[in-house]
Amino acid sequence: MRRITIVVLLVLGVWITGGLLLWVAQGRHDQLLVDLDTQYPPGQPFQPGEIFATTLIALMDHELHSPFGWRPNDFFLWGPAVGADDNANRQLGILQAVRESMRVFKDNLTKVSSNEYDPDLLEADTLLRNDARKFWFPSAESRFSRAIRKLRDYVAGLRDGSQRSRPITTRNAELVRLFQAWTDLLGDAHANLYKQREADGRSVWWHTYDYFYHAQGYAHVMDALLQALKREYHQLLSVKPALQELFDETSTALHEAALMNPLIILNGSPSGLFANHRRNLDGYILEARQKMYSIRDELEK
Image (cartoon, rainbow, N blue to C red):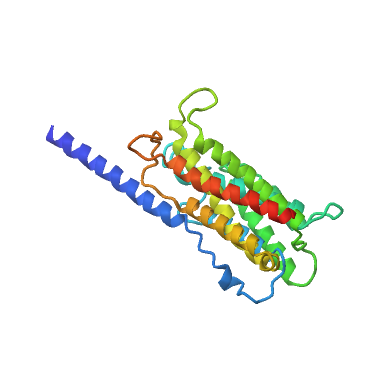
C-alpha cells in the first residue's frame, strides 16, 4: 500500500511539474520579439509594404521554429489529441488571422481593381492555405516555410529597385478592408468567448481552452501587424492625431489579450467565486473590436 501511495504521489508530482513547465514555456512563447524600431529606425526610408511583410514573416517563422514547433499536425502519439493542445489552438488562430491579413494584403493593400496581383504575394497566400494539420505529403511546415520564402522574395523585390514587387498603395479605402476583415475575426472570437452553450445545447465547458487560445491567436497577429501599420501609414497618422490615438488604444487592448496566461482557464459563473477567463479575455477583444470600428469611421471620412 505504501508503495502504491509513493507511485501515485510521484506521478502526481510529475504531472504538476510538467503542467507548470508548459505554462511557463507558453508564456515565453507568446512573446514575439520583433523590434521594428531597430530593423526600421524612425526617419530611415523604406519601401511601402516592406514592414508589413516582414512582420508576417516574423509571425509565421516564430511558430514554425520555436522549441515546440508547429503543433496542430504533430504525430498522433504525441500530438494535440493526447497532449497539451493550448499552443496548437493558439497557432490555428494565428494562422487564420495571418491568412485573412495576407488575403487583404494581396487583394487590396497592394492592388487596385485594374492591376494584376503581385506574383510572390499570390503564391504566398496560396501556400498559407494548405491544411494546417497535415503531417506529410506535403507537411504543413514545408508549405508554410515556402510561403515565408515567397514573402522574403517580395521584400527583396521592393528593395532591389526592380519594381517586380507591388508596394502598399497607402490609400485609406484599401486599409478599411483590412480592418473589416479583422473585426469579422474578432466577432467570431467574441461569439465563442461569450456563449454559454454550443449550438446543439451542450455545455461550452469542454471547449473553454480551445476558444480561449484560438482567440488569443487572433489578438497576437493583429497586435503585431498593427505595429507594422503604424510605420507603414505614419504620414496618415501624423496628420490625424485622433486616428493615432485609436491605433494606440487598439494596440493596448490586443496586446493585453495576446499575453493573458492564467495557469488554469476557469469558466466560472458571472456571480460565482471563480473567474471566467473566457469572459475576461472577451473584454479586451470587444474593446479592440469597438476601436477598430472607430478607426474605420475615421478612415472613411
